Length: 378
Image (cartoon, rainbow, N blue to C red; front, side, top):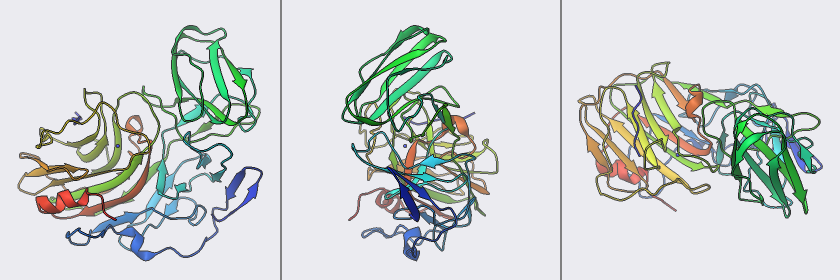
């Protein structure tokens, strides 16, 4: 039972750049795989995967080597993905990342849940009526200086329709299946009407280009083999993307090769507060000890850092964005053998986020070191 607290090498064609999956686009700084920002006195991590500044197209399909202390990373996504986001500026371009290759923004590795874009010819937005959509929740977003306004076609029981402009997705729900009308006004360069392939929450995810038919981007499944120990400290820096309902999104998970016994760093959950979270099998979780309120929603585009540790004696502690660590006891330690980045195969908890780095130590750090890991540093 899971428990939670309260996150180019290529060439251009029009507005699109296609990443060549086998091309090496310059050298990669070997120190990027570590998080040794000024002021952090922790020992070097045993596992250190850094993703900032890496070029698209610089890794072959299915693999990602992200630093000398990072084991081989397996990347699975049997569809293209793009670097486009709903926060992009008018006139911006995007890159296409080939199937099973990592997709990077300048600030890190992209990880998004699977979704389908139901609007046709999405790089040339025009008013249209969708095909028949199943009953459920959908997200509409646009890029450009115009707007798109949804309304019911044959769909019934719809609520949440609103004129949609760049940077402000519209989330609507229809209780009955059917078509939806999209009226375009002004100068739009991209638009997307999507819903999630898994789970019940829906977000503005990364851009899915279409032509004459709807298109689907499969979820990113990013896995790393590890040889863990009963004492562990795990930390991650991330940027959450997409606006939507409160649900669990797992940034980083250490497990035994399944989703049962595991340590998690979770971005939000279905409880009354949304923000940092963690999971460990067989124990209650520590609350933030300094009494600070975590506000009612995580913030799109705002970077965060989390760190969680479990010692072989059962002591555990959790830190978030430089706050005083919360502590607890009774966690049953185990030896993890797999690291899932951005939820990996646990598709109902897929993180819609950009990962800057993930670090793991096979020891419990001091509480001050744990706090320092989550501070902001120049």
